[in-house]
Amino acid sequence: MSAVASRAVLPTYARQDVTLVSGDGAWLVDAEGRRYLDFVAGIAVVGLGHCHPKPLAAAREQLDRLWHVSNLYWTEPMTELAERLSGRFGGAQAFFCNSGAEAIEAALKYARKASGKTGVVALEGSFHGRTCGALAVTGQPAKRAAFEPLLAGVVFAQPTDVASLQAAVTDEIGCILLEPVLGEGGIHPLDARFVEAARALADDVGALLVLDEVQTGVGRTGTFFAFEQLGVRPDAVTLAKGLANGLPIGCLLVSDGAAGAFVPGEHASTFGGNPVACAAAVAVCDAVDDELLGAVVGHGATIADRLSNVRGLGLLLAVELFRPAGEVVADCLERGLLVGTAGESTLRLTPPLTLTAEELEHGLAILEEVL
Ligand code: PLP
Image 1: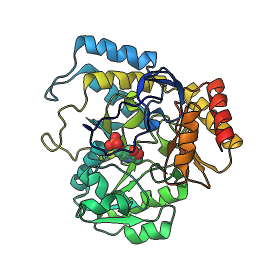
Image 2: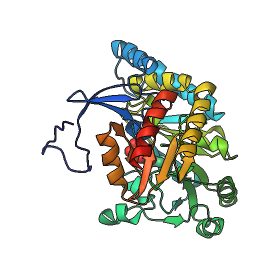
Image 3: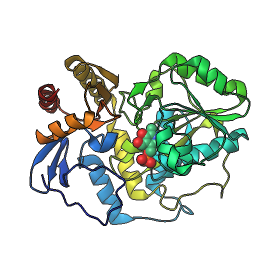
Image 4: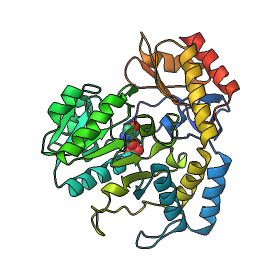
């Protein structure tokens, strides 16, 4: 392993002692030429695998034509991506930005404007990002503590506890914000009954039901949107991570039924809708077909069969451990497998959706040895 650590970088991450220089499919290579099977995939970002030929070709072609214009003009990749996402959603309008947290900021502003109310209900243990608005609705006090006071009017309910949700959703609430699977909070899927209750409560009080699909979206759970498995239609969803297979992009998608709240000048992002990122994202949307989604479900089931204490959906999986997850991450790294964590004793597995059966077998053999 070879690390190019630098004191010129702010220490906001506890980085592994490795510098990665190239990637191909589910494999990464470090600065010394050592290969790693990647079960992190940029934390559910590189869904099609590293340097997948389709988004790569689309991004390259776009780089040769046009890198950037102001959002005062239209570009073909941006409108094409909006059409693709609207089609997948079943009628929606998109606002493009550059990250998950920015998509959450857009959702919070949109819900205020659409509902005329400032209150937000989010979940204990949730994670929505590190900007001040996204942090305010993140249900992890330890992450918020050093940065208070944040946005006012945020109430946290207990995941899967309908009574707690009912108590939290009052007439002041303009937004109910849920991750279909709490990701950073430990990979805890919400059940359909809870999300249906949230839908009904949002309708009762005139709030928007916003699903944060930054981590669950774009096929990660075995359907394009995780909400397709929950039997509800949200008023809006946020997307980011997997959308452009690793190029920076975020998106707020508002259902046609909830559209019309923003007017020109009320929200903006200089780089939002960047043509290169959007061209790659169009290729990603086209690649996430039924065959790939079927493979995601199949691979997820294989992992759950082979390892103990697995939970999650599709290829967004946790293995609950009885020792510090950091030790397992280090042991796997030593054996050439990258895995992540979602809490002190929770291993997170988010391999590329395009993983082959042989690659899955290779990774499972290492995990079985280490666990
Ligand atoms: N929402 C969810 C569900 C996430 O998992 C994350 C990041 O992990 C975010 C929002 C924030 O995304 P970003 O890191 O791109 O700002």
